[in-house]
Amino acid sequence: MKRIKLTIAYDGTNYCGWQVQPNGITVEDVVNKALKKLTGEDIQVIGASRTDSGVHALGNVAVFDTHTTIPPERISYALNQRLPEDIVIVKSEEVAEDFHPRYCDCSKTYEYHILNMRIPIPTKRLTNYFVSYDLDVEKMRKAAGYLTGGTQAVSSESLLNGENWGLGFGAEGTQPTGNLSKEELGSFDAWYVGDDKEKVIYLTFDCGYEAGYTEAILDALQKHNAKAAFFVVGHYLESAPELVKRMVQEGHTVGNHSYHHPDMSAITDKEKFKTELTAVEQKFTEVTGEKMFSFFRPPQGKYSTQSLQMSKELGYHTFFWSLAYVDWNKDAQPDPAESIQKLCKRIHPGAIVLLHNTSKTNAEILDELLTRWEEMGYRFGTLEELIVNSSSTRGDSQ
Image (cartoon, rainbow, N blue to C red; front, side):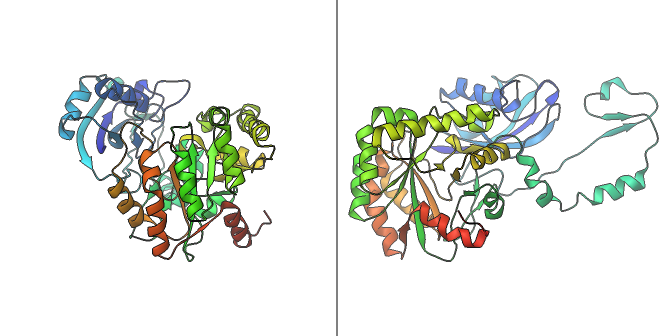
């Protein structure tokens, strides 16, 4: 598995912006489809920045992970043959696996072109905003001043549409930054990391289906007396009820990962949103006789301010993560020794660790990994503990 960085230029006239939308053609969607044709893999690129409908770009950046044997620098040429003429891959190159386009070497330049004249020029209609009356340049300069350094003011607003959860890493052993800060997430009863002053690890597993490795994972947790949270979908409850019962019997938390694993940020109808969660609750109670914890992990890590708010209104606590790695592809499992090294290097106080129960590598390394973390001075906490400890600093009574 390698990570490829694309530098993309496009004319946005015919597109509903960059980000995939349910009711329109977007640049991201076209690129994803072209990559599938080229590699045969289901690829979802991660972009550096969204652009609105009709907006152009000279150098937007996106990354994707792939097993293709095509040389990284040749991917741009191969991809351009499969893209329309208004989208061009300017450059393709391999980057480090932890490179994230929104957090690494990040700078963006936006240009707004105004065509200020009495009669418009037709050849500039797609790249300029036409204004026929006189402009007050001084007022424009004053207004522009309000935008300077205004990232904090627009950060929440920019998340009205769907977003992929992402992390930016700093020094080894320190907490990464997330798309949203602890404080911003706190307003939605959501977390991605715990206290940075206490060496506690919160273990979580996403369970989409049973691949035969969950028993070994549970055995390793039991050996270390470590409790974890397992976020399950409807299929898992239906196909592996005995394993779910064992999770409960051994003191683990079973959380909600939605019934059908959709992009929950794309569901704007609150009743439909609620149904995805209540269906899991009902099935869990049917299997275990217990009431499910109101803990939610957004499928695919996709969210919006609206989906976070709906989760909160339904009484849910939402949990993202501060440490994960590419362990989900059953056909390309990571090397065990490299995985241990990577996870030990990236561990940090208050880490919410995301692992997948479908990973053969995770089943093989978990015992040794937990041992190594314990030797580093870490203990294993629960999400319930995280909520209780956070309540005093957030000023609520969850």
